Length: 339
Image 1: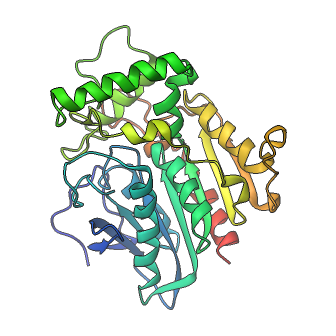
Image 2: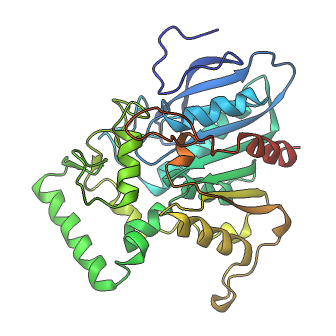
């Protein structure tokens, strides 16, 4: 049945049915999700859980990914992480490496209990900052049979090292830790981040790309931290001392890391894939035992935000889609590896 109160940044496809659902995590949070399934669904189907970007909500690109996968024969959910959007958790817009990983595992729990889902055929998609979280989840949960990290960030790496690892020094981290520690005394509820507005003329291109998605009708949503005032200043403090990807070289299930050729974040995806496949022999970390089901896919001409919604040729609005997300390739990857 169609939802009369449609509030997504993309139109509802006539090829899918949609309904809102909720499920619990082991930490006691209630996660809100949109469930999409093919209109002509029969029998038990493979399923996919989707989340991201970091700070975004299910009404944005994660919902689009879920809907497109449902058009291609999968049951799919896009969920709001803990502390975000319509999901529970106080204070709002905060984050935790273990809680966020559990969010994905709880989504797999939910899908595995659905009568129309084949429990042996469940995959996940993580977008942007949730790409790294998806890889962490896949390293932890063998029920996840296939994983896609799309236009990924490793939020632990960027939190500890800064962009392009420019802050990868002990002194720089110490200063950042001191600032966050002081912030807890000054105002622990203070918000920061999100996409800057108004946009400075000299802003880096990737900041302009974020603005074009989050601050225009193309992707703006009132519940999205990235569209508005970001998240708590101290909300990612624990991310500085964590590293998501340590055991990803031991993921035996299928993984595709998908990134744009021109994305500022491409180094996250390529480095994550190289570690996933080859490990780090000089540090005693061995290559992956199952390398043949791992794939790095670089999309020619695509920027970071192009993989949010396919990209648009006109800035500051919807414009004409560049159709840069390879939906059929994603479907083929999951069809192959979910069996």
